[in-house]
Length: 45
Image 1 (cartoon, rainbow, N blue to C red):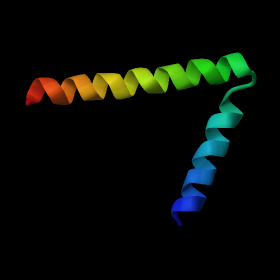
Image 2: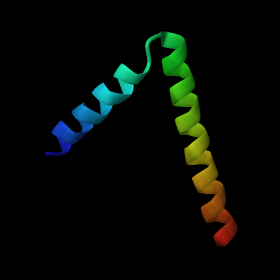
Image 3: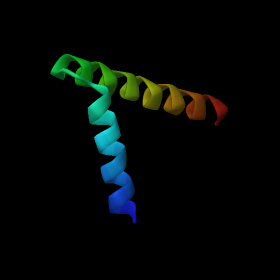
């Protein structure tokens, strides 16, 4: 079940980007969200 979910998520993400540049921007935004979440958690500790 996890593999199917991961595959569906990956296909959705890839279909959202029409170019390699768009993919790079999406990955960058994802990294920024992870960084924000990590900062938020570290401030709460």
